[in-house]
Image (cartoon, rainbow, N blue to C red):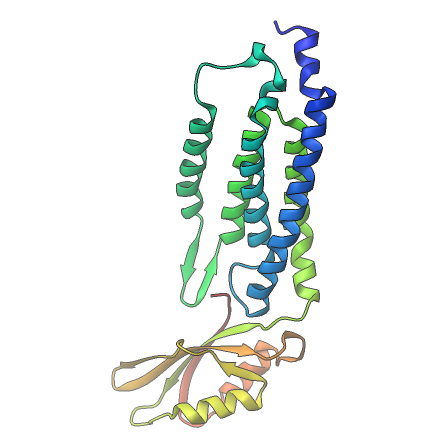
Length: 247
């Protein structure tokens, strides 16, 4: 059995001081990641503040522990291994990447599962921190990750942003919709049709348009139920589909 001295080495002064430094690196990376993620969230993108914050923080954790390798395993030679721990970490991160890809789903203009994938990757980093004996840093990363996933979504809802709505319009046979007319209709209701999102198909002789409309302000946009009522009155429209989009 490991001696009490060996166990206490994981919480010794130098090792604990290293964990504190790691914590401040994690906190700084989280704040910077949230800042970058807000720009994406503002434009209605799928990868928002939580995803960017988690990825930035977990990446910082992997990088900073590499610089403090002498403090691994309590800084004790008794806990040293014969293998290359850095290669083990590399294999873990690569393997978790394939797992994360499996939870990301795309349906039309909406992408889901990005935050779940980022949290899975962050969880693997928590395990790595525990594995090398950075217990305080592992607990800090777990706490910051939980706060990020639980509370940042509320912060995103409070901050100004632009909600995106995926719209599919089916027109009657022989009707020729004009892009300028659709853009003016969207603009009069506080939306802009995002560039490069218009897709036009013909089904049984009827034109069908798909595009993403981005609200100028989520706080002032028309509710999707009100948009649906207005869509039913548009000239030439025989069917439509509306859904919130994060692309």
